[in-house]
Length: 322
Image 1 (cartoon, rainbow, N blue to C red):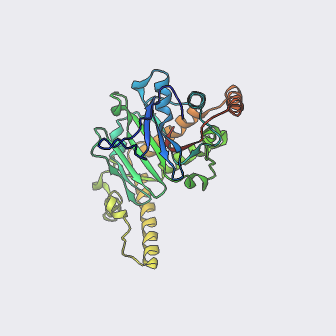
Image 2 (image 1 turned 90 degrees about the vertical axis):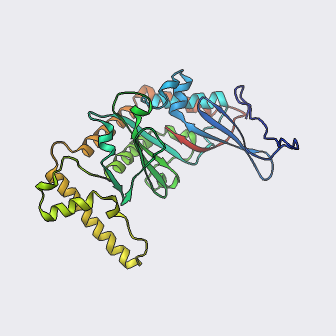
Image 3 (image 1 turned 60 degrees about the horizontal axis):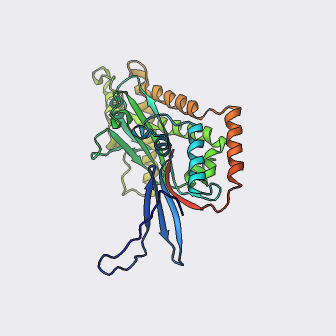
């Protein structure tokens, strides 16, 4: 692909001067462009990066990264630049994976919610100890849930929680009725509500501890439920069970999870933080994805104009976040 700011230097063997059949890469406005050699000759083009950061850098807002809000209008602007400036075909360029999420301003320190994480679908969260900010994730087969202190990451005193899903296999979204195949599909209005609902539902399924509970006020049975429930190791499925044993164990964990959640609801002091944050996620997503008639017309006009473009590239979107 041709662009005045992209050079794609040739990989060369320094000893022999031979041109190597290796990927050629260059970066512009936070987006990594790669030319991947094909077995039969020529190159396949891949791009990777954050449309949020790309938009910020294109608007000379680089220091913000993706710590600010990113609306549908901003998304449209970023895609318009990507299509027109880099000559990318949005209707044929395939999305291989995607990240989506929101930044929510909390009325309490972010670490209060992060340090209460227990499990998601019986899998524990892991903390990235290499990061200087609190960063936790839980990896499933088709997606990864990420929660971290976005304010601290960008040197802000504000309590900003980033809640994000990284989709590793697009079939995960398809199974939930979300049709996201090409770059242009990012502007499919029906997807916005479904993605927001998925983000909220995923957060609601996380198991949290509650620091307001005083174990001394519990009965012996309740104390046992509480201590087990807040222990991530309690929820791990043993890997040496037969199919029958595994089914029975899952049923026990399902009952234990209900008992634990019921206990938290009865003994929690004050507002449930998970419910509060869940509402904030829902509100922020709806705020960012609200579309009026003017914006809808603008989206449709842009799509029509893109279809008139000639000599545009077909890309593989190896990793995109919005």
